[in-house]
Amino acid sequence: MNLRQLEYFTACAEQLNFTRAAEQCYISQTAMTQQIRALETSIGAVLFLRDKHHVELTAAGELFYGEAKAILRRTESALRLVQHVDALEEGKISVGFIRGYGHSDLAKTLHSFHQTHPGVHIELVRDNEHGLLSLFEQGELDIVFTVTPYARKPEQVKRMLLKHYPMMVVMAGNHALAEKPYLTYRELENENFLIMQPAGRQRAETEEAIFIHERGGFVPKVTAMESEPETLLLQVAMGLGISILPEYVIHHAYSREDIRIVPLVKDDQTAETLDFEVLWYEGENQILRQLIDIIESVTYK
Image 1: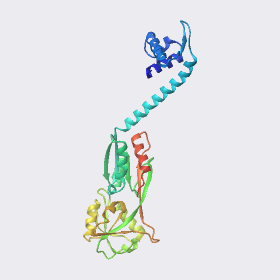
Image 2 (image 1 turned 180 degrees about the vertical axis):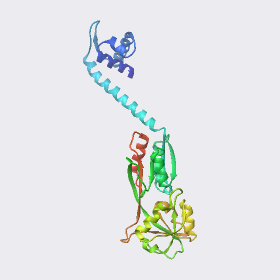
Image 3 (image 1 turned 135 degrees about the vertical axis):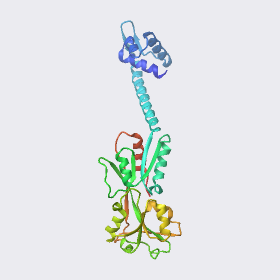
Image 4 (image 1 turned 45 degrees about the vertical axis):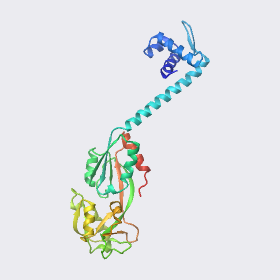
């Protein structure tokens, strides 16, 4: 017994006419008769009562018809599932992420995705938040990991909050404030600030300076603006100033002896945080949907 014979049998059972069933299956009537007889022999039961003018199912045929239809439905469903999975094993997904976020749990998320979809090419694009949003709106990126507290949000975009990342004050290891258990913006008024300013972003869009003014009530004295966190940390270690950075950027630097990392808090001593989100457009992209499911299952720490 095979699937082809089950297809021939169900056609005969529904048509109750071997000629029409043979035409439906694109085989000759003789071949149809031979296949039905072979099926009856293999299962050891007569499925049809037939003569030159009449065809009907036997009791065994009625029972077997229901089971044969169920087997064919399950087979078709299994084929669709395999084809769907196979489609997900190929293709490409473009992932944009803000500078510095490569030190976060992004690697863990993408590793989990790659483990389940090894055939999907993951294209990584690192840029500032404005550059990422522009590429996203143009359809160049499928998904974006970014923080955009002041930037525009594309219409009809789906978004998910990943984490409130703690903000940290980074200073030279011998700085006068290095032994403080925590700091507020107000305590930093007389400091020189080194700000992570990605290339292409206008000075007026320096969100770090906006935060400082809102929380501390003063305009920061910005002495340097760098696009890469590694350069910024080097300047901090040299004693050129302090920097305020989200924890995901500098968590790997806690073991360094030449810098000191101190939590930044509000006046009520609750943590200053930076909201981080992931953005995407809802659609028919099943590869993207699989990545979103993984993101939802990952605990960001």
